[in-house]
Image (cartoon, rainbow, N blue to C red; front, side):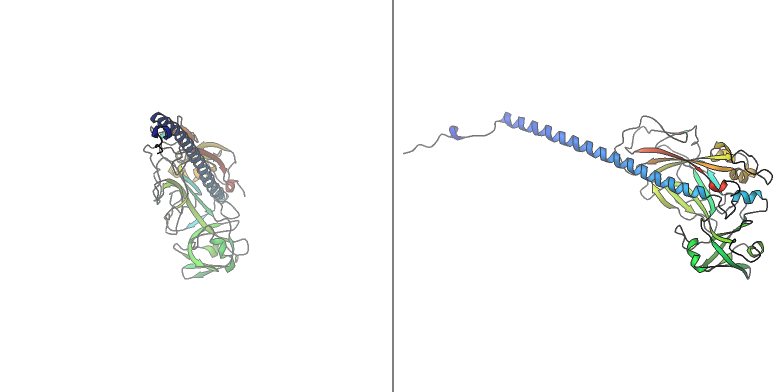
Length: 387
């Protein structure tokens, strides 16, 4: 009879020591993989944050540059030249709007700024701190955030349509034009314009009206278009949409800062702002003024911008001189503090970020968001005197 094999002879396996060594080696491998994964994820988040910040800042500056350059466009003669002629142009027929009042439809002032307190070139703000918003500004929705300036621009739309006829209708006036050209007045998403401008190379009027393709009918304050634009309009008398636009920083639905753009209505208020781009935490503005301190028919602008400062400096000339002070502005320096909308694994900042001289100091506890500053100097092409 065959004997059963010995269990000690044929048994095999791992000892406890071998098992512990294997677990230790596997732990090192897993830890290394986790480190690589974590580093790759952080690198991706940082790169994505940088890309978002650059993209948002570039988009914001493009919008601002386009509209800032248009400020003062009043047809074939700009607002500055109209005013220097001392003939009362532009004539405001948009209700009781006083020149220099800051009313949304005050087209006698084509560029106007509002400075956030304690945010000038020599000031310092701490990220995450309590910042103060500008004051004296008409109501904006959503509410502007603190630590960011506000800019209001007024101009006639880039493209106008020739006015074919102006006729009296009761106490109003009807302006006829080629119906196919209606699209020139409804650009930039304005399907039903209600504030218009009319200009030739002598005069300029701003008024409210209703209408559609082919004609508009003036509303509100009585206009005098037929009297000013005689003889009967030819190709030189043009009808435009009149735009008054405010740029500011507010909080969006995700409670993130964003650049907003609000348009003034015929009722003299600003409509709810449209979010242009998120991730704009602060908008800083400096204004370059012409050397000529007082503009008149005998003392037109020189074209040399020698005085640069905040909106508060422009307004320091006194309430009576505010329209003249803003008419001297020919250059705007724009600074943007952009922040990534999401956490970007950014390290805690050790120094301040400077935007047009304003220092933004890091918070005591970082939020892991990537931030960067961007600046641009923009000339108001319609302030090139005589165009």
